[in-house]
Image (cartoon, helix red, strand yellow):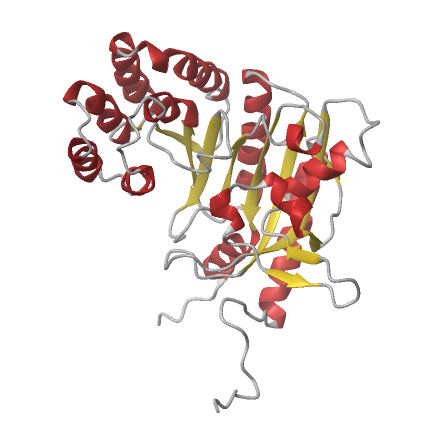
Length: 336
């Protein structure tokens, strides 16, 4: 029989001491104030949902991370939310169905996830975010990105780098591959920016060099907007399937750059939410932080799963990563 220490906590969760808790709640207030100032109205959703309803709004990969339990009163299978956006989709499609779009909503809450790999150790994560529902096109994407940019500029202890991509680029190429290609392994190589490994998998599956080369090229396209867009435009001349997504990305970049507080980089091999997002996707990073402090993008097919077909885009800020970064920056130096 294993003895459990009296002061143990479950794997993947943590306590906040008074100083860190105070910093956390201060950050919460600052973020929500920034969102409200941008015209986004706060909402609150429940910590758990009916599993069948919640899982309408997530893909198979995310469903594998959901913590489920059975309601002892009626036997319903319930799910601790692993993402707040599907809850907002349910809310907008149900209780708020009478509200005309566009809807600008904000939130702060905790999500819960099973650990799937070493890179993601936490099972409880505090998030603050916004959703712009019922608006599409470059102007809507730019609005969401600017809210993220201004909010992070207001609360971040160090410069922010915004990495922007478009899932339509890789989707246009991966969708043409034969069934012999092991897509799970391929997508993992792409996610790791392993260009050689990506090309090796394609070659082993019998994909021609002509079809594999554009995929390998996209994996290597990341950096400053000017050179990346020039390289992508040259590639799109040879691969017309890339042109629609590239045109959308170019429109967003051209409207976003003036007045941006963050440093903007492009990553055309981005695999963030590949089965979930439908257009632009982005991460935000802080100097010295081990993981992204914010992420988001366009998800135009989610609302339809709940019965209200509306385009949407949004992002979430990782409150814990940002709190730790601010606490580290504000900590007194022990140097003599």
